[in-house]
Image 1 (cartoon, rainbow over the protein chains, first blue to last red):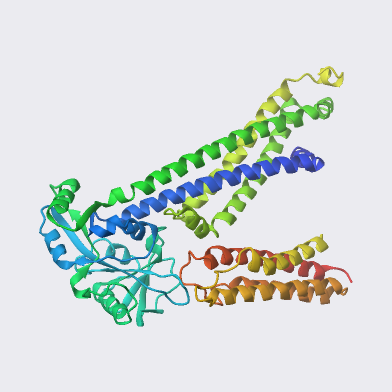
Image 2: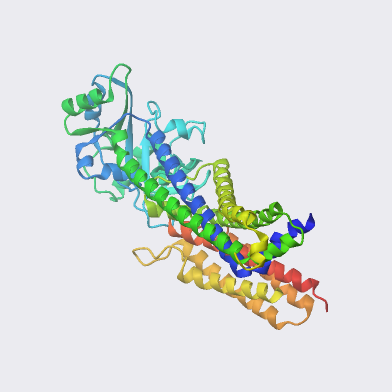
Length: 401
Length: 131
């Protein structure tokens, strides 16, 4: 029994180059399946996170914001910027038919923050009417935000209790949000009172180019959920026809571009994984077949010594399983070591919403990757093992096969 | 085997010192030419990498079993501290999607932990060596 276990190990050790090549191939296969699946899964989680974070049917912005394409840049791409419209226009919007929930937001981009040269986007919301930001702020912070309290996105290197200075005004970090994988991770949220004070500070310091506005009389956008009995299309058209100099945008349309990019990336990744796996399966099959062919005499001698056909095929299968298991586990670990620490780099390179799935999901993907590698190795070896048990030992020893 | 592990640890600490300046460096200078906080972390990691390489090279020259183990174990401790330099000991940039967080920090942590493990193993092997 002990010999049965030791023999495959000894065989693998006896042919170090062949074993190393097989191991390298299985490492590559499991790495590819883990990295590909985890990337696609993270992109999908990021998109669904973005969809849930947008949280409104319609977004109404000043018309110039849509012509400068700054809207999608700010809301989806994480670029900083601001645009404002008169709050009188906001009142007209609210008078349109079919509006269920409506809340105003204010945008402000800081010149710099802390030690870094990069600006930070600040979004101010109205706590009395807000229905998009507060539901997920409440997951991290249950209390109402006081004046100069801010909530920072997950990717900002600030923590609860820290003080950040914007335009010379010190703000206290009241909470840090969970990761979303979207541009909201680098955004600062605060209430309308604080953002108006910050807009005023930026005007006092002459640091922004909107000189003629009164912070009390402007908003950046209005977020709307349509009332029951009305369609999003109806309400959107009504606003676009009846309120001048504004543009109502369907939030789902804003992320359609991202969805298409994501679908493209998923398809290409799927094709690449499929191609590499097909190629890998073929090479594994050839390598196991060649290995069994060149060891025919060795197996024939074992048969003469009393080993059954079943025992021999078990040796081949065990070798394949050992290689598959070692390669699967190594490849999975390498994949995790590459993707988990460097996911921020991948996110910034892809420029798409990217959110790693939860730990359980990652463990499942890793386990599936390793299991598939073991399974495929066993499948590739099974053909060689089948041929081995059908070969006549006497013919091999006589040199006729 | 002991020598291979020791040389691997030296190579890793040299790679850490050179890599943090050339390959996985922190954020570049600001428009006004000044540097951000992460540059301090980059310099500190580079200096630690050099110190670890010197310690491990010194251990190669020591023949006595216990004396050779001391620099190895010291390097292991220094490597753990090096892993904590980016952001834990030295505060880095504001946004965690910036280069210092996305590239330098994970690379330094991985390399430092590997150096710590190899140095510790090398130190233990030196301790277990017969005089």
